[in-house]
Image 1: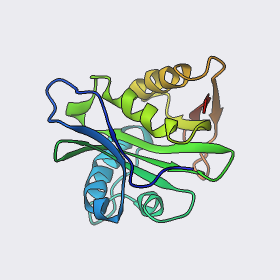
Image 2: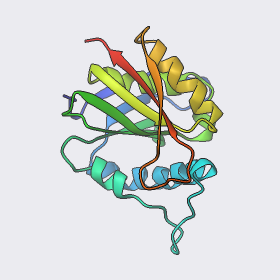
Image 3: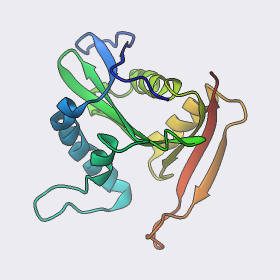
Image 4: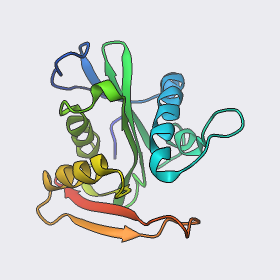
Length: 180
């Protein structure tokens, strides 16, 4: 079970304002998360081919769930006063937790910060984890197996059809165990 209102100081990352913090998001973080969500969905549209709605937004039901539904959790990553990333998790009361959405703004990438943030999120709830990504997203296809291998020598990959999207390529799921 996750710990609420926990702030975790991350190692400094050259060129980003400090401190670097990962914390469980609250309703007060909703506005920043909504803006990061828009960037995330736009970024993901390169692989999902999802178009924005008529008002320029993308579907945000998962973000709403992560901010209030039981079994979901949300994290915010900040550099000083700047929101620079987020993670949404689900199935937190189930035997296998799912890291549902994960995003860092472009200037925060390529510094090892994503790996530190991902490790912070999954380490907060030891046990079995699964993360889906698209093979065409080559950065994610390199990143998530590295995160998994850092915890579990027996991590695995599985390709699964995308529910409701029979014409889409399958998602790739990486599964691993985070020790207590």
